[in-house]
Amino acid sequence: MKLLQIITITLLLGLVSNLGVCQDEKVNWSIAVEDDGDKQTLVISGKTIPGWHIYTTNPPDPLAGPLPTYIELEESDKFEKIGEIEEKTVETHVNSIGEKEGVFVSNPGIFQIEIKRKTSDAFNIPIFIEYQTCDDSKCINAQANLMAQILAQ
Image 1 (cartoon, rainbow, N blue to C red):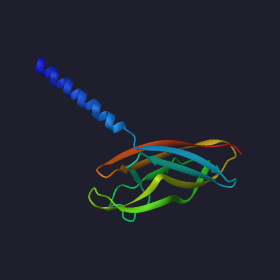
Image 2: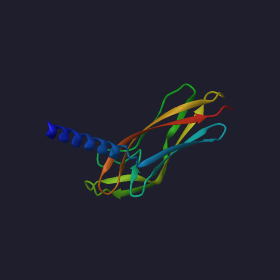
Image 3: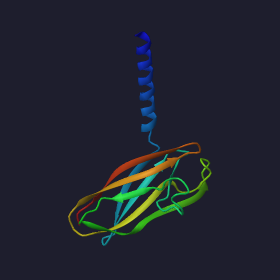
Image 4: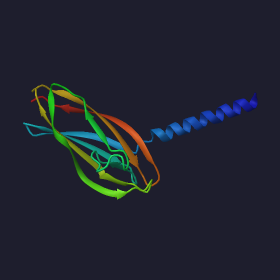
């Protein structure tokens, strides 16, 4: 009976310590909205801790390297997306994990999405981000949710 309690406690401690590792955020996401009257630009920033990086939304070969960053705006009749996501400062490098080439964005990773509003009322845009962040020894898949606040005109 005593042995069973020791094993149970050991397993629970191991589980709790692993949960802490999974919850350790490597990327801090934020959003800003630039209003140019006719259009708005959502500026999404992903700042990684030192030694970590995130990947492009548009890799040359999505099957050849790390998982690309995926950014989705919740659809609404209050705006329309204009064009594709624009990234600032992308770099190509060979990942030491599997030695596959990957294209990542510099720190902080800046992703810009232009929208055109269809209403003068204020509204929010929920944003879902799915990404992979890597250092020189491992990669972690993660998700983030942001909310862009578009002010009334």
